[in-house]
Amino acid sequence: MSDFGWEKNIRKVVPYTPGEQPEDKDIIKLNTNENPYGPSEELIKKIKELDIDNFRKYPNPAASELVEALADFHGVSKDKVFVGVGSDDVLAMSFMTFFFFFKKILFPDITYSFYPVWADMLGIKYELVPLTEDFEVKAEDYNKENGGIVIPNPNAPTAILMSRDDIISILKNSKDSIVIIDEAYIDFAPEGSSVIDLIDEYDNLVVVRTFSKSRSLAGLRVGYAVSNPMLIKYLNNVKYSYNSYTMNYPSIVLGKSVIKDNDYFKGTINKIIKTRESFSKELKELGFKVLPSSANFVFASHPDVDAVKIFDEAKKKGIYFRYFNAPRINEFLRITIGKDDEMKKVTDFLKDLVTEES
Image: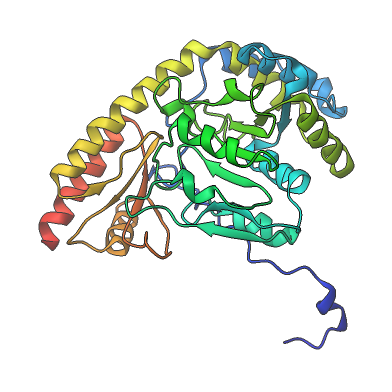
């Protein structure tokens, strides 16, 4: 303990640990769920057309171009869309806006590890709701008094999708609380899995999305929320009280362009899904337990080979996975789906390792 008198007045939190971002480009990077396919030719063209003079000016604080494009894409009015610097920014703003310290908020015990960090930082009480033995969210477990609910769908790091009926059940049983459905990976789930279409029916629903996964823009940071106009207004009130200029000029312009180039990204999503299914099959043939995935990654464990051993040996070979040293999942690895040639190298590595260890 230091002798600084001022230290007792400082907010202390255990920070979120992001996935490692190695500088070596000659690796197979499967640890942060990025899209392995780059931006489209149309987007590259737009990058080259950016007006350099606009870099010296403040961007439009309302990010109107991007908001309008997102509203058109989802078939909603623009007062139902909120944008931020990646979905992390949107989620953090949502925690600040919708959750207080009066009642505990609820989220799964195995989920996106930023949720408890925001709650701790903001002094929000929370309760971890255990997943089932099969790592699924059980809707009835959320049927209790709460100050809000946050659930990723598909969940992370498990990749398991929750049904629309279960989400509707939660919405109906928590009418006096805000329910946030974090759809960071929804583009990799079966068509019709999103609940954005329910925002008019349930005024307590906030749906959060990102361009970091399916649309290859993790480096640009674009996220958004879709909800009813009142909740979007509250979000903007907090945003403008915190930082008016959250979205930069390139993010606004290129984010709009990405939406218009939707066919390209549908193509890359289909490629990833196809690779995910074939890779999952190959893992199972090697003896791995693979949870059913509706995301751009798989969550897998092997009964005979320790996850840390696989993680360390893979890293030596220039293959990066994500490992979580946490209860119930410390024998699992989260493996992002890369291109087919990358996954072939991963499969060959795992086959050799499993053969050697078994």
